[in-house]
Amino acid sequence: MCELPIKVVCRANAEYMSPSGKVPFIHVGNQVVSELGPIVQFVKAKGHSLSDGLDEVQKAEMKAYMELVNNMLLTAELYLQWCDEATVGEITHSRYGFPYPWPLNHILAYQKQWEVKRKMKAIGWGNKTLDQVLEDVDQCCQALSQRLGTQPYFFNKQPTELDALVFGHLFTILTTQLTNDELSEKVKNYSNLLAFCRRIEQNYFGENGKGRIPLRLA
Amino acid sequence: MAAPLELRCWGGGWGLPSVHSESLVVLAYAKFSGAPLKVSVIDNTWRGSRGDVPVLTSEDNTVSQPAKILNFLRKQKYNADYHLSAKQGADTLAYIALLEEKLLPAVLHTFWVENDNYFTVTKPWFASRIPFPLSLILPGRMSKRALNRILLTKGEPPLFHLKEVEAQIYRDAKECLNLLSDRLGTSQFFFGDTPTTLDAYVFGFLAPLYKVRFPKVQLQEHLKQLSNLCRFCDDILSCYFRLSFSGFSPAGQDTVDANLQKLTQLVNKESNLIEKMDDNLRQSPQLPPRKLPTLKLTKADEESNSFQPLSP
Image (cartoon, rainbow over all chains, first blue to last red; front, top):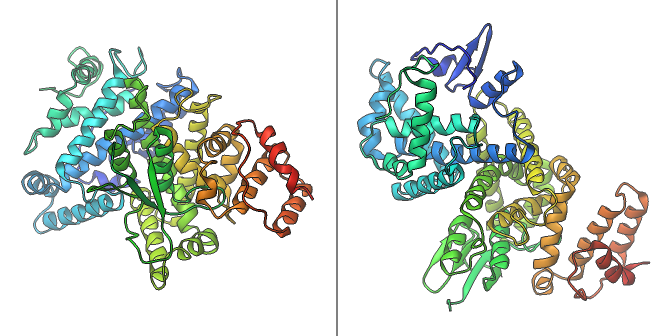
């Protein structure tokens, strides 16, 4: 969205290369910056920012919605991936442990699962059932849908960091195949969110777009 | 007409009906929506559990956790948000998420992890309301749970050391307070003239931070500089919690404390005169609890009404 030239590289040890242990991270010259927040700050320091045109109240709103997405959608994604037994058994373990030889793939997968479960318990999601989690996701999507309304982007004509964040999460939810499709069904209930994802995909990732990453919205 | 609703929550002090954020959120929402709640404060008898506080019981339902309690109250037709538009409802969710992610870790830290605060204020207060020998165990457990939560959600690498995590969470909290102040602006409540769920949540998180006296007060100092947030807390306290005060808190001392706070806000609190008056008042004989004659939002009026008998 900032029209910066990037090259995407996939590596198995990406998490270990990152300074904070989290992906994604960008490598620019001799600097490495990870996670969305710091990357946005870094890009801003270099003179590119998407949210300069917003006033203070709008910036507060944008930050609040970004926290909502992080709080609800991210946690729900983690829950579904690591705390739902069906998904864990069939998909997550094999996907996470894939690049490593036996027995490392099992050990690392279990370790990660234990870490995620501990975190869920600390924030009070440990006792939630899948239905309750899906209900929370629905509430979150409803809030996002109501905020978006009929506008092309969340803050009218120009995309901002919030649009990028929401697109990232919703696109992943819609395009990742899981054992049950309830999560993506919840998102599909909101037609303006679907249209939003398609619009961003076409404008920024499509054939005639400016990006080089091929993505398909099924 | 609903069956009587009973709420068990932690008690009050320092001018607040409760010093526990989550209990305060529920109490505030109940006042805003007009729900008739019978509040039973946890004391040091063995009645009831202390695990999941606040907890609401109606005839055959038990609901814990503020979000679920608020949902339950809404289903019983005690809804403070019915006049909000869909977008405002969405904004409410977003700001609550902001509070929980950015402000809550720092509030937990100020109350439960910061050693000076915990050992001089929080632990004695909670221990005095829990029967022995549970009072030796429970505060420690609550403190560990708070520390755990902070470390697990915020303490990821490269922030390995607690000091760095602390710096980060206080930075986030100050930014969050600034954002709330920007959003509130000069209006009385967050969505116009009537308080809603968001007001209850903000009040619940901010009021203990604002009122409780701590030795280590960096976040409190920052909050006190944001005068519209302080005014917001004081307004809600004086409008919604004044009348039931004498039924609630142990009496005159708290009312005196609340008045003193307002005085120090009006005059410059750095002056010696304020501290001298403070000392005099603490040593003067206990005054019987007085109901303030009228509910007024202007501090000046309440000042002149209630300050006369206390002047030396």
